[in-house]
Length: 391
Image 1 (cartoon, rainbow, N blue to C red):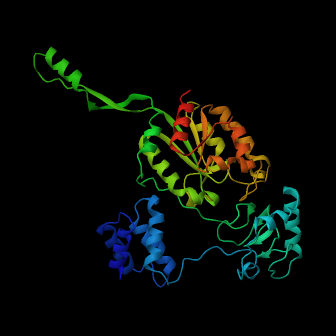
Image 2 (cartoon, helix red, strand yellow):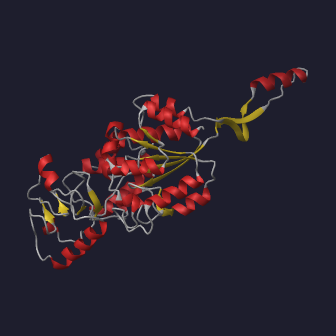
């Protein structure tokens, strides 16, 4: 059975070896995990995966092979599951959507949600008031409202939620993805400043020949440090939500950037930059890094690149407490201003097609905060962005 599981991991690209497989067998023989699929999942992942960036591939292989067996338990919702049971889904025409009114602002939305949680006693479907499904209420799932709180829905439908009740898990971008085209690498190479730094470990052939000739033919080796791109880059990547539509191109960009820039530091955020960022999406609730710490760690000579579709509620940018996932004490615009004050060479790369930018107020706000330094995540957009960073 486990041999087939081992082969399944190889099929999904997890670089597992016989040594790790035998270690798993030994652990099972000693009953480190016994009688629980959850225990076996964590034991096998710890034994077989050497690098956290392969966790996502491991999860896919595990799910494909053990399909139908007990799943690893998910978080339990605080709102009764019966309230959010999907029996039907609301689909409105554009004309019908235009007739649905928002409650009228961030404060009104939050206050009304508090009232609904106090008053509601049972499940509701349809309608425009209670927390439920397939309606036009601002609170619930599988319905429609121009400004609402999404509760209990798997994924986004209309991209209009102001806040998301459920805790969501995002996966890290895979920096091993092979580019379908070399164009991204070529565009990034516009941002280059070569230098030789560090230990001398590369043969300097010209100087070796000259020195050997001056030394009467006795070999005199001359070494120099490796020549590399000395440009320093801080890369901030939006992850989850509407960015799920753009994972492929973002992975290609991430992969190319890891290869191109020797001095590259990357961080994840969701929708907009706030008081904290993170390095690992699986630990983003427990291992966050304060944005202040980032600004005090990396000098002003770093180039700042944001990657995101900037498609969100404008409250997330302009209001304290506007984040869809947590209460941010200060508005995202405040943090963006602090970052651009320290790092004057900053751009935003947007995978959203440029002809749609005008439909989103949040994109306009983001462009304004960046001094109109937003570029589409296309070949020409990358070239323009790299040119901007070299000024």
